[in-house]
Length: 345
Image (cartoon, rainbow, N blue to C red; front, side):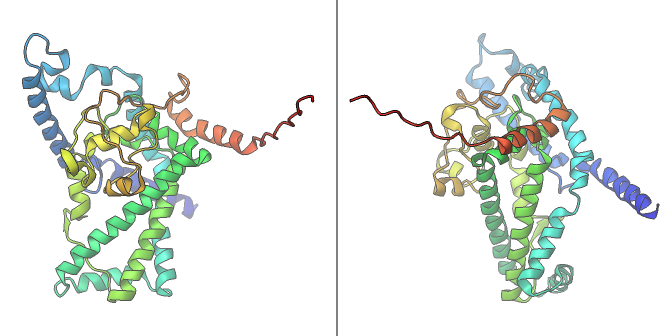
């Protein structure tokens, strides 16, 4: 009975924490990130309004509110499914994975360091913050996220290339219109793959850092969020899952992740299949030949090519249909090659 009570207390604390997402800088829907995204949207609204001003201006460019919340998005069932799924998945799936990332990180850290405690090393790092070399801390932060992004790129690539993994990742791509909560349309199996790969990678990286430096550098942060991640969330992150096309000019799109970079990844246009896997550094896509950036979004259409209507139109289907399809793939027997009858002489 005591364990059950502890679980209830843990879940209650988790729920209370979850409902602070608008005020929590570690959450992608933090009000400041949303506000800056709205600021980018306003600049684009003014630019486009002047660009197409006159009697031909469309309904969505008559007011900023209509531009920000267009009817073609919010009248679509997919948009409201994302709202429902956001709460459904966070209150069920995310809780079941609670602590998994930390466990993987701690285990790989101990493996690399020969049994050192990650929590103890963090305390040592905090104690040394006044004496720490800030250049080392900044370099450590960049290396941490560069390595993490390479791991994430690899996991993302495998989700598209391995058919069974694709059945689960397809959930995220099934959104036919997008808004910031669409980012939460993820299957728990997807989440577990990311948490396992990133947790093991981060733990090993931190462990190697301790072996070399003797402590864990304290990364410079804003509101408790490492500066690099804070800037990533701040500069248009919430437009990545939205209807608003924002592309950095010229070569900058290959350096910094623009919302357009991720729009193309979600596109079901044949030229956009399996492109733009990176999260923070498009450089990985450039290096591995998966980068593409069209000049405009006329060919960008969200969704999964060939998906049947109604295939993933409820929260339950988003959870259980991928298991059904993955099981079918596992049971599918390889087709034996047919014997070729030689032509008559």
